[in-house]
Every structure is written in structure tokens, then in C-alpha cells.
Image (cartoon, rainbow, N blue to C red; front, top):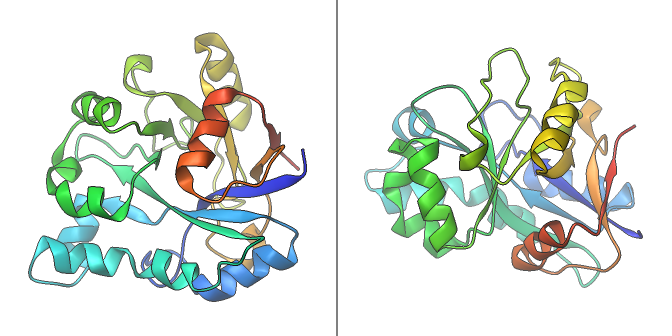
Length: 222
């Protein structure tokens, strides 16, 4: 397993809780020996209503995509920058890492920020998206019905939260879930604390998703 990818990555360009710009963060991950990152800035109704400026949905998605687009400027032949989202529904404070979205999907689906996890599952199936519950055993999270997700993040590297990663791993094994590891990168201390390692270089999020579905990967857990 020679190609390491960050699966949970926030940028200060968009996420108000992050403190490192997209371009600086990419350079940090390059220097750490990674082969790419999936940019997963926060995609929530609250953010679009209160934090992401713009009159129209297109304006707001344009703002959301700044982190990804700025990071993408640093992509090279040996380092991939891919688009993802960390999605939250109004029903609770659960977060979901969604892999497989593209820019057009986000422009076309204003309704997803008002859905429930159950409703979104149907959208994910139609659009070939993989839904991973992030830090499912963090104190502010609830266990999601296993029918509505494809997997769970069993290692979250954020030092400022107790994500009970051991419980997440037990839960994943019980349900045969896809598993992921992510640094939950917001600050310098989060750098390279998690990731997924593949046998091959993946150039886009569809290939990233395909590798997860194959099960042929390893997780970084310091």
C-alpha cells in the first residue's frame, strides 16, 4: 500500500472552524508524503443560510467550492485533489462524509441540505455516492440506522474531540461497513493523523470511491 490519501479535510477558505488555507494545507500534505486529499468542507443548511454569502443557491455553492477549487490549483501529476462534502441534516448533529459528488451535482441539489438521512440514501443510490458517517460515537452524534449509510469513519484523528474510535470500529465490524480513517484536518496539529492507503494512484473521486468499495486498502491510525 503505497499511496496515502486524506479522507477528511477542511479549508479555512470555507469552513469557519478551519484555520489553514486550502493551498497551504495541500502543500503540507505533499510534504507529509501523501498522494492526495479529498476536500470535505461543511455542507449544511446552517452554513448555507448563515455563513456562506450569496443571493442564490448558485452563489452559495460557488462560495462553498472555493476551498476545493483553490486546493485544486495545487494538484499535480503525483498529487490528487478531489471533491467531497461533510453533510449534515437538520434532524440532528450527525455528520456524513460523502464521496462521489461533483460540482454539477451540488448545483443541482439544493434540497439535500433539508433532507433526512433516510431521504438522502435514495439520492445517494441513484447518483452512485458513498455515505460514511463521520465520528459516529462523538458525544454530539447519534448512531445512524445502518440502512441509511454505507460505512463509518472508525478512526478520526482530531485531538480536540473524543471520537471513541474503538466503539466506531466495533460498530463497523458488527454491520460489515466500509471503514475509513481521516485526520479531520482543521489545524496544524491535525496534519497527517489519518488516511486511507491504496495500491494504486487514484486521480479522481470516482476512483477513490471505487477503491473503498473494493475493500482493498489499509487505514492509517497512529
